Image (cartoon, one colour):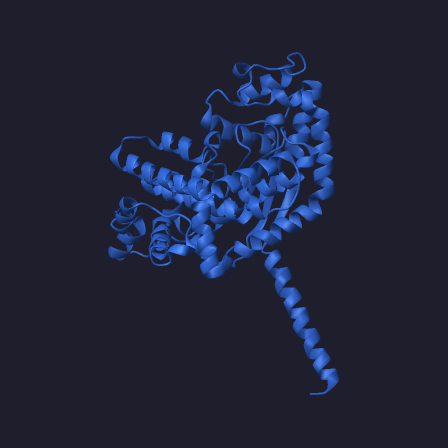
Length: 382
């Protein structure tokens, strides 16, 4: 082969590699929508709430909050916004949607929105590239990122308009990030939260043709729900991964401290022991799903089961790369956990913690899933 042909071949290979990388990143495209925050700020300035509830980001924030607190409805939101100018520190009873507190921080929030706009190209590129490593190969399309004020969650999401807390098809594939408590210095922390919630959207899209997997997380029996939620939150933690995120700001630093704490052998072992106890308690009926969720996933207790799922995902990634994590999105959580436990039994040094003998026994003899029953009956798998 002549030198000229070698150069042409090398150039062709380089171009192909660049195009492959570009296509991988383009598997998901983010669209930032600042309108919910901007319209709320304008209403806080003027007291005029006309049309405010028609904004999709605001509507979703209220629906999500109302799931946890029935008093956090449209009327409460409007009342808190319209009265914020005369009530410098709205009492919680008057402000169940937690929106009135944004009034005193209007200038800081506007500065944050300006910083987000300036950082948008770099932030979307970094988030899209990170997600592309762990996403299934099919294109994910455009996902809208709504920046919102108030509410009871730092972040939440919808897939085809469906969320754990509402079902509004018009909302499509989206995530909603609360920013009224953040500072300009928290851009790296906002990006961390963005990637975490974005991966939840990816999880839902990957299971569109697996409704049994979706039901396991949102409305099935409590033990499978615990497993599915642990795996989903843990793998979202793995993809965002504060321990591997460089940056500054109080929010990111808080998550980095939490990751470091739960990476310690004693704390991680305690996290797995809590998981074992919750499985046993839910199986026996000694505790309710609501109490298990509070103890295992609430930030009040540092979301300890996030780190159980993170450890399972970390071992998956070590064994098969990001593609193995992507494949797990379409698998039953109990099957993934059983595979993890069996691997840890034979490769003990590879796992920092594992499940108890009782949990292992239940995983090995757990009730048939919907998918198994359907296959046994001759129907196609979900």
